[in-house]
Length: 178
Image 1: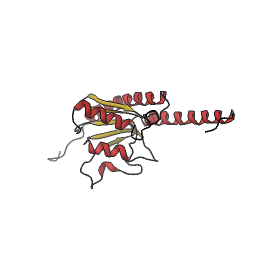
Image 2: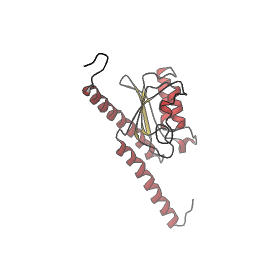
Image 3: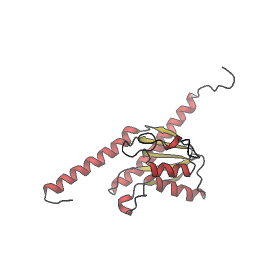
Image 4: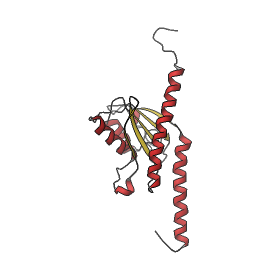
């Protein structure tokens, strides 16, 4: 091995993947809470040193607040628990790729890493539409990992919107309009 080069650490990578799957499972549980109350099923968890600092799920409809995204709630709760707005060394696990607003909050909080389940081709700011995670014009960079339990996360959204379309058709058949 050449001096200064690191050898791959397959055990470390396997542990990271196992941890990512575990924490994404917690984000999925948060997403299910949102779906159970009629919100778009997106969930998020902020983790540092193997401990949950904050968690959240979408509440935009119930709160009538366009900023009540899962990530924003989890970040606010994490900062409160950490008693610091800087969430250095923290990882955000979220079921859907963050939007520009959420990526802005992630960067401002100085988070180390974002792990997301599925891409958001309509609003994603971690690679789909934009990539704010590695913009040289910003003062902080965020490492990204995508696709963790991606099919499961995408399935939550697909099922939710299919049910919404079915219910809308039922209302229209019975003479109710939107």
